[in-house]
Every structure is written in structure tokens, then in C-alpha cells.
Length: 127
Image 1 (cartoon, rainbow, N blue to C red):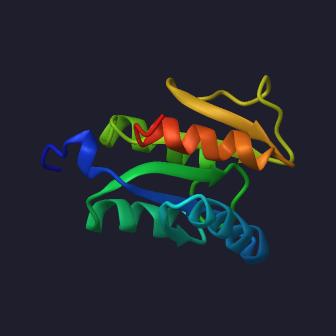
Image 2 (image 1 turned 45 degrees about the horizontal axis):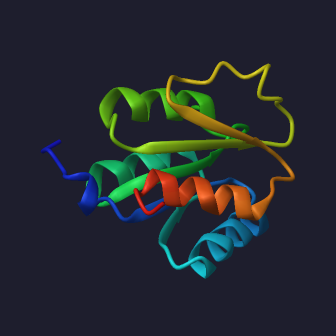
């Protein structure tokens, strides 16, 4: 991947297999004024990351069907696209139980929307 300046990274990618939760997360982030795209699983997320420039933050659930889980997705992102900020969430895994890749942030579900939005702002360099 070619070098992309952090200022060019303005899109948030939401990765969540449960459609209603994914739509709620997209709405939450869009309502805060950010551009959002979404994926139903890690495979679709990887395809979007490979095809699109401009993704600066990935907000992913841990538990997903088909393919890799959210923690594995986060590790892959940090390896291939280290400039992307990764926010991980789960209703089943506690932060202490999760082996988070370096420089990732964890929020347990149900998460506080304002805290997630603040972390998105931080990840996009808008704080």
C-alpha cells in the first residue's frame, strides 16, 4: 500500500456481524459527523481496507462468524496498516481477557457512545 498521510484518513470502518448493532454503530458515528462504511465480517473488512484509501479508524466487534475474529483482524490491520486506529468492542470478552494488539483500544458492550466517539475523534486526529 502506498503511503497515505494521516490527514487523508477520514473514514471510519465499522465491522459487526449483527446487522442491528452494526446499523446502530454506523448511525452513532455518522451522527457525530464522520464518514462511515461498514462490513458484516472480517473478510469483507479486509477487502474494503485493500480497495479503499482513506480509512483512518476501524471499529470492530471481537466475536464474528466466518473467518477471523475481531482481535485477529486488529492484529492484521496493525501489521499491514499501522497508521489505522483500531477500536475493539465485545459483549462477551473483557478487556483483561482479550489479548489486544499493540496500540488498540477496547470498549466492553454496552459501551458509552460519547467515549467511543471521542476515541474516533482521537483516531482521526480531530481532538
